[in-house]
Length: 312
Length: 312
Image (cartoon, rainbow over all chains, first blue to last red; front, side, top):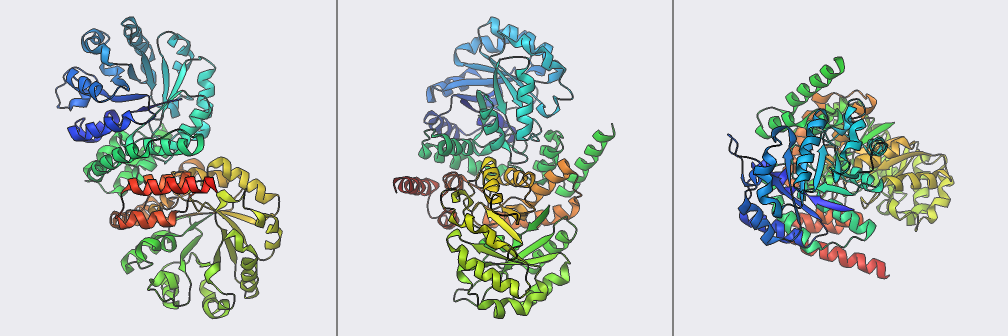
């Protein structure tokens, strides 16, 4: 079982993908001493019209700096819908030597296009992961599941992503069974923490044979955030005797807790309601972080959406 | 299935059992509109040498005020080890009309004495719950389990308390089986949130037939705190169509979140380590809240204890 820490990538939703150099250094130095296989440090993208920080583009000097600070495997992620196949050559191939894994965030509706992108990535020799979103809707909206055999030779890790943070341990078991009926690709799990189920869902996934799982320091990540790396490591240390350097772990947790006191990621009542009812958390994050709307009005809006989606 | 909210009682560990009247009023008015059966508002005790607040003693005017603000069932709790049987008459009987439930916190080592106290409580007509501590140690240290048939007619609810916050869903199932072998007393569960397992443990307990479960608003409670009432209600609303007034819920959550920003309850790395290794959280709470020791030195101390307890 492998752990991928994606603090800088997923945490970037709160800092617009910029982090102070001292924090980045603390992060890499700690990770170097922890039982973590991959560090996903950001997105990789062409220049965009809006300003987005260093870890959204991951230019070569950012990758070089990461490589200088750690010899852990490095990963970046792409949004399939924003990443034309033709960009592989221009945007990824020039930095290929830095990248041990390229992850692709995939909407199940675009599974065919994602396979075309994976084909191009493989032709250049990249290791590829698919992070397929909205797993709580796959049982109703899972036409792509029948296409899973086509990942053979193209996709190294097939991640199930609990996008809404509303998945329960029983759902994990069912989804894995559904996927396993079609493919023996190595599985991954990316959990969110809206209902504080990040740990139990991830441990359940590991028990069910998932080979790679994601976490972030202090749970820093979009919306309610992720499984906390420190919680996963502490549980695996106590239950499975995973060797953990708690000095290193403490140093990086304390550094990110300072940032958390500014940005306030983590779950709260609006995220709980959106998670429990499988509603998208993008809007909730905007409403919550702007601090313009009361929780009450956010929850009323969510209750209306829930009603709307039930009526449709 | 019934919910007992013990925010004022368990939250008192952070405020020394005093709460501003406006907060108390917000609390009772919200609870009145939520699907919660019991409100445990504090301890009941003789006067002690140290100063402790209103909700540690629950004098008659506190109980009267609660009764004025809500017609929910009211509960108080006693520490068996500090509560002589002879005090039942002097401390509890005079306020009997206010109390729908008297809970007794019981160390498994004192189970015999607790039964004597229950006998006295029953002779005065009280409804009685036992909150038996340290459930994660019952499989090694559970001599009292064989005595459970003696609770018949004396104990209305037998609570399993996850004192260290280190219990997993599988442990809940095993413990319930162990208890059910001896007695058909109605069961309760009181979970802590060190490992963010409060929700899943409580839902597992409910699935396994537990009849009453505890929670507190924002998880306010000793150490890492409890299952959050708002999380339990949101999950039960989404999964089991429990009717929840989210306006009322939001009002009380927002009020306690202000207090949380002062006191900072909730889990963190030291509580995770103590929970995962079944170490007492009393010391951890002192170390953490005094902010005198670094997390690093707290965790070193905990690792030494863990080593010590393994060596013994």
